[in-house]
Image (cartoon, rainbow, N blue to C red; front, side):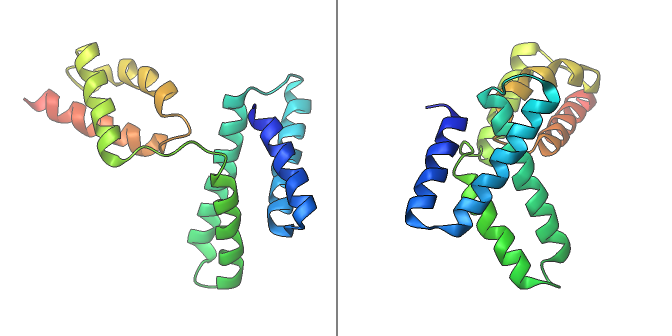
Length: 151
């Protein structure tokens, strides 16, 4: 089942069981998806849908970090929305899995220094997209390549 179809099915289920929290979050995501389809004048793939859902989760996480102490009730609401949205995202990679992927990619490409980050990142991006923070992975690759450059 495609992700958009799953969202529609879950929306109908939330209506039937009168789960207002899930229903509002799913409706919001579907509205963002429809608007994006209209703006880009094309059907979104599952990868596009995952990217949009991940973006929504990241936005909520950022807001929680900013206002979590000041408005705990709002932060709790956003946390429950993140929990609902996370059901649609693939399981994130652990730190060890990310390190293994980076090491494997660097070895395969025989990257020897920071100048090779342009070779490593394009290979890693399709693998980690939606399952790890790209900024964090980029920083890890940069650190590993810097240590290889010094040796």
